[in-house]
Image (cartoon, rainbow, N blue to C red; front, side, top):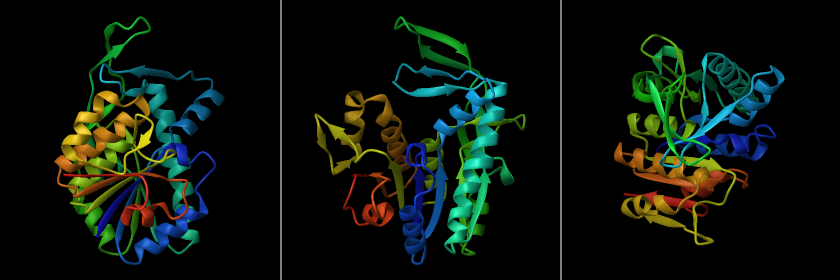
Length: 268
């Protein structure tokens, strides 16, 4: 199987866990794995050290995202593609996993359309249109590069930065990056690892949903989970067979997700 794993930033706050690395090593013996990671909290921490205040906005659909101006995208690129990406690569290499650190800039791995404008909900609950800054929506993924790596026993580790039409770095959502990578590479499974047990509705964990049930649930989901459900829907629309939203802080989270023993599984 080809498996794309999105490692959420919330699971990286204390560094790359030994359990995650050992699980990757075990699973990679029988499957091809691509890792996409987040790390927004560390970007915010570094920005604070550099004296750059971070602004977050909310879309009418409920997405909460970082407003990315020129200075912020430079910090975002430095932390994501530099510090976090290489920490993951080193942790995997230490355990014998031949990881390769990439961002969407490398080999034009991920191209994106820069958002010229953003529609947001302001503090008074009103819709406003603001300049888009350096945020992008994925338009193309270089599957040839990814296939070249995974077919030669490398494990790509991808930071969620895309390249724009003017060769500028663009901040992209990590979950949506993972969905597009999984769809383009024709992955058998996308696993979105986070710091919660899975999708909960009315206080109950939902172990399994089909595609239509996931779409129907969107209006009942908070801002932390809605991006993951959208990413799951997007991945399935792109041809991915199965998506799991699973607790990344559990022991062996990838193995358990493959076996459908944790989290929420969404299938078409």
